[in-house]
Length: 401
Image 1 (cartoon, rainbow, N blue to C red):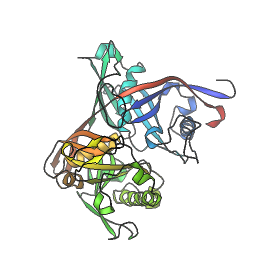
Image 2: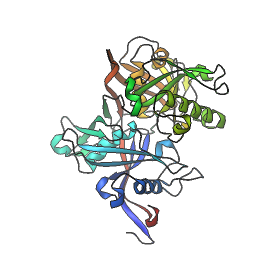
Image 3: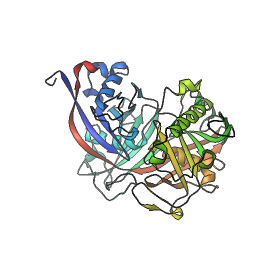
């Protein structure tokens, strides 16, 4: 207990990929917050500084974006096949909500590193060739993630020369393998990777959202449930940066309305009203064939260096780069001939795709196969990096949870 009626909780502030979050060991949380429920949610909201009607999270650890309003809880896994359980909470900025419905692919890299930092994995004993393999059980979605974390002398090697667009400084590369990334969320598992059984669905939408009253979409359950639409069908080129979307209130409302319609079509919700209560999943993204553009950092991206363009919405705003889970969805959809993503990339069979996003480019891979039960992906891969930014104690008022 800290002075002035505050409670101190051991915590680590980490960057993972193009996201940041506050990491906790489960055993360090207050007793009533060690289990899922309202007390845990209120605790994490207060730590991050939500809900904040100003949208700034000044009185908390959050950075007022979907990429920086996150918490992670790590604990030893009860399953002998995994080292740790990794639980991710997406904290809403302006509403009293912690969304536990999906994973954060970016923070998955940090989760692997944190497992070593926290003493759950002995890297000195396990490392081979300077890399420690950490097996994560992603508790939100019930999936295995294998993180290949570089180590030196039993400690996580955080510095290096790996560059990730959307992150200013280079760091050490962490390779992630998402095993069987097709999600099994509620009714959406009926059609496997494509919950409707179709590679492209025609959504019925109000004419004030799309003039034709219909919109083609690829609905996929891989990495995170995602709705892909063609940029041209909604009046975009696929080269847009954050300001072009996030400064347009009407555009944001339209994306959210389309996301809700797609979510119902996927079977994730019974109504668009219900879909509006959960922003983290599904995601909605728009794709386009490659063309030259200038990224948010001023870097010129050549069409010759990418296979397609992708822009994705996260928690109601255009993401500054690309969510790791959505990158898995892109890789999986690109690997299946006939999806909107695959066609934007030029069609045909492919196991690797490099796409352009607002901050630059990203290379991801997936191997898709089709059998009598439909399409599936055994594994998706991508590279990220992670680094501890601060370690110590986070304080919140004792009466806030």
